[in-house]
Image (cartoon, rainbow, N blue to C red; front, side):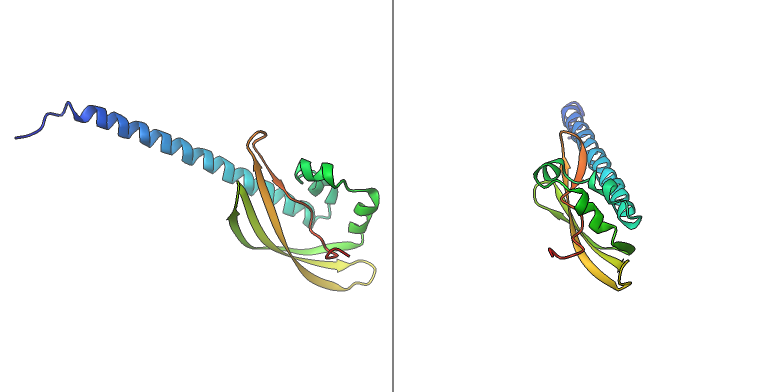
Length: 144
């Protein structure tokens, strides 16, 4: 005996609703990922071009409030020229964060010494503002 198609209608509706919800989630994740890509590109461009004040505007507002940059802090960045910025790896972190390992090549403008440094960017998604924020600027002086 062949079963009647009537009982399949609620199941088909449920499956269609589940598919639509899944697609909406994928679309949201895609927008969130695109926003991260845009912010990471803008941040790396600011660093490459020596626009550290522009890069600072992409730092998490909580961090900017807790550890504000002074004119003297910004003047330290004038001592270096970024000559390379390379993305090495990216991985998801806890609590809506993404970590990206980068290598930055810099030249000291005073000594003309070139060196490479690695930096782990930590990006946090703020659902309220729908913005990705970075945890801070690269430390070219390794805390010195």
